Amino acid sequence: MALITYLTRIQFDFGALKLLPAELDLLGVKKPLLCTDKGVVAAGLVQRVREAAGRAMPVYDGTPANPTEAAARDALRIYQAEGCDGIVALGGGSAMDLGKAVALWATHAGDSLKPYMLIEGGLARIKPNVAPLVAIPTTAGTGSEVGRGALIILDDGRKLGLISPHIIPKLALCDPELTLDLPPGITAGTGLDAIAHCIETYLSPQINPPADAIALDGLGRAWGNLERAVQDGHDREARWQMMMAAMEGAMAFQKGLGAVHALSHPLGALPQPSLHHGTLNALFLPPVIRFNAPAIGGKLKELGRVMGVDGTTEGVAQAIEALNRRLGLPANLKAMGVPAAILDKVAEDAPKDHSHNSNPRPATVADYRAMLDEAYA
Image (cartoon, rainbow, N blue to C red; front, side, top):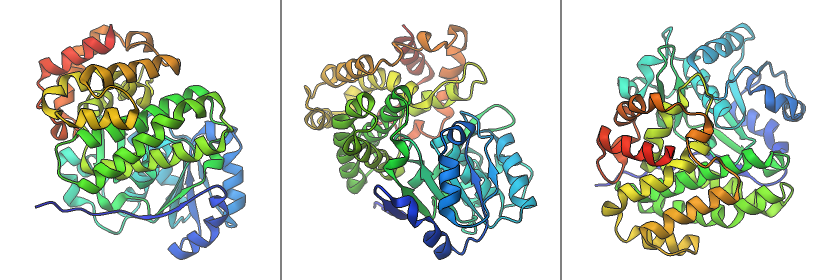
């Protein structure tokens, strides 16, 4: 039997930001904490959101590139000191994931987020009374605005997932206007994140035909518009399509991801170098597709149809590698600055990641090491 549940309230289109005051009123939020990062502040987007909100809005702008338990704790202190009653998360996946952690911690006991992590049995501990959260994406990649998960680096150094339907934002406010000035490199890396979500979800063996359909629709939008968005950031149609593709990727990955994310999550936990999640996914997609080929059968043909390429293992894998090159992404993990000495540890950590169990083909530590070697060279 398949249990299928979708999802949350979404306001989507150019100009959606103007709806923020009314949406906060619907949620009963009078004084939200704005969780964001310094790059979003420098881009002038925080000021735009504060002006649009029409109410007091304290700001936490210390979100790191990979959100941490320590940063969530700092933001929670501001939330409590300012008497906030909700969260507005503005930015990419990091800011939105941090906002989810703060919204959870504001209403759940404990001096650590560890008990709420999925692999620590946290699913049963997360209750419905999470503080109201509005997510406003400024990139088109993670889809965290509709996602049920948040990836957080704990104080002990592990990058783990908070997973619960209760941490899905109460509102996803998606305004492609906020992405028009996103630099080409970030546009490319986040766009490949959306593509990875769509492909991994579709290939997952879990039964969820609606998720499969959404994943394929999102893949088609991203594959057909990412290069346009990279080449001309003010291509409004391409930006609209990419934000929709990112949202659809996350709507679909309620079904589960796979080995791509099982590998990228432990690498994203490294303090140095700080590695971009979407770019890691871009490099892992081809080796993971090759590894999974014996288990995904006719699904490759469907991927090829949507992407407009040969629907074989090498046809799909090589098309992704060619797209990565055209977009100017790093050629391999070595070019990203990943030290070879840590690959054994990453291979050991990958099977412990929550995405591992929904990969279509069971993978051992040795299998993960082989995929790492392919992505490294």
